[in-house]
Length: 535
Ligand code: SGN
Ligand code: CA
Image (cartoon, rainbow, N blue to C red; front, side, top):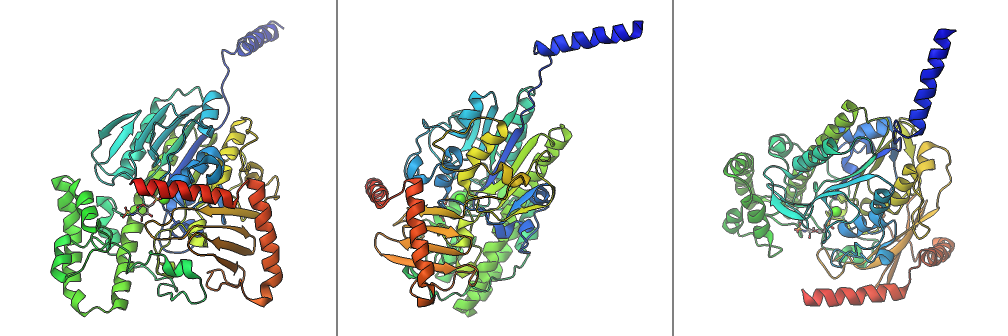
């Protein structure tokens, strides 16, 4: 009896203290949003392309969900980031291309989480000017950033940090996690620069990846028959439009010796600038691997046909690209280990994605920008043990437009009504399979590097309709079921007359739904022409 009353006394004390909030634990989930730059889904092994191994990123799919058809609304770096932050299409948030300034004063999901009591941090690449708003802590790269000994802007102050950018970004992220207030939930945006051009892997990866050889995509020598003017006139060819020094790491002096001309006037400059940042020791380790490659190329070059050169450049490209992905994957591993060691794995949502897709030699291309699949789609993996079953696969047409509302939803914060994306929380947990039946896409940065013409379009489960405008007026229609590589434009094929009509109607509706129009295109074109004139 006495024991029981003693117990009930302690229980009442406990309840009293708890109700006063002294024990109150904030159980809202933490969020780690990982985004790399230009990481094509073909180079995430969970997608099954067999190009490389990304065991750490793959863990998210094994222990959570893999989205097979996630995409972006505008396949370019800074616009994609603006869509992530705002949950609104480019023509609404204003950041339509890499040139226009981003208006940080508008709402973003980090600001909303911050006012709801979350600790917020952004580390790595953001590719926008101005101090990131909505973040208690920010350590970002100015512009594109550098691979070796990069500058960082930490809470507004610029300083150079010695080392390799991917590793530094991870270290800064982990240091912030260590210093945070562990009583409050957090959101960490951990944004890698890699594997963005010009693809400089970490020293520890040079040997391994430069000696690898990769299977070529079947369309490496695409002649673009069956496609429109836009694909034919794009400047993304591995042989014709890639820098020899900057990208393929041929020494500028060797270019001169062999009589190879610069395609871009900054070809040699890019090489000198990237390698010029290295310390003596870093440079020596780099040269020890790339000098023999140069020597070998010097011997072979005089006898190489255009075709031989294309094979060579594809391998060179992939070695450095895949080599740069390796450290991104290691960073993800470090982060996941940290969460585990600190008891955070269960209550933390971990997202892995890229700011868009990327061409890894398909159609003979590198870069992105197009509404075609390799560029439109982006890897998306998400782990949240409390709600998402291990090994979940989702084919729904989610977009980067949906991140802001999804993350707000997980955090229990009200989603503002002007957000255009949709939370995919219930889709990920399997509570529902209902989803949108079409996605909308816009692209603006033209005329510019890579010369991908302005376009917009709609993609449904099976079809894609694209309109290229400004200096052409061409429509393309693809049947993704019959032609997943989008090699044959069936817009003028009478067999598709009904599909064409239907897709036009859908396009009109979706443009109206999101508030897009030809007037928007005109307005953004004029802003672009003005901005490019000034530069
Ligand atoms: C640089 C690259 C381009 C790339 C853009 C945009 N050239 O200009 O190849 O398309 O960035 O990329 S480089 O020779 O300077 O590397 S984005 O991801 O930032 O949008
Ligand atoms: Ca990018």
